[in-house]
Length: 330
Ligand code: 13P
Ligand code: SF4
Image (cartoon, rainbow, N blue to C red):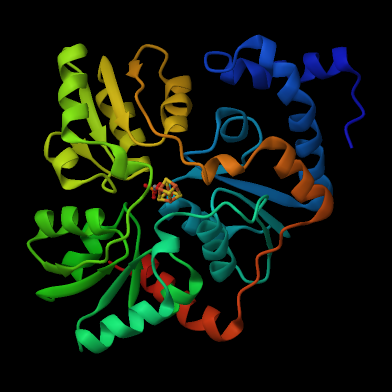
């Protein structure tokens, strides 16, 4: 529990506020400071680390997270965690992946309703049916799926390594699940024939080529970075397509004067904090699942050690193999 009085709290959280002052109005900070202070203390008491996805809000991303990144980075980092407890500030499939890769740790998700429209679009039985329909065709499964779906797969991928994996399998045809647009975008890049599934990210499917056209008309010189979960028509009119981490790298390296990140809203806030000289144009879509995670829920998770992620061992073994194959893939 935090022992700080209100004035003390403002003083000792001032360096944290300094990190986010460009995106959080000062009037809102007192509402965050108490939870942040308590979470930092609870992390020490519980021997916990917080892994946060790039779509988490700035007060989580910049003030309480120990490790931040895209789905691939979070999976890699989860594997290396030494602390006893991992709190996953992200969505359920990310917490499951952390548990698969570091099963001895207690993995907590602050809200069990933090799902994903892609993960919800497909079941293990669907994958078994596809295998029957396309015998011998390898199944590449996006990490945005349940452990049960991963368990039916040959190998996983993320938006950060999908191209490398599909090309590297060295086969003319793969089944790629469940994101239809990611699969179509990768098919266009690689020339590999891809059997798709009609799953979509409810955040990225809402962007259109007309939106990009309008942006370019309203903001001359703008550089458009799109996530590969966007429809192919959006990717076709963007300047760069990549995972959330690849977009962050692009902004850091290329330093465009004016940029739009065609993805979830918190990305621009989180990246803008580090690049005050870049103009971020911000039409974006919120992910309601990512936004289930809040400071009070992270605090509650650490106070009560809920909600612990567990995976049936019969599912965990094959699911882990599919994720590990992805991580070992050269
Ligand atoms: P990446 O961070 O791996 O690009 O994934 C984006 C996403 O939608 C995760 O839910
Ligand atoms: Fe799922 Fe899309 Fe939300 Fe990511 S942004 S968690 S892919 S619904």
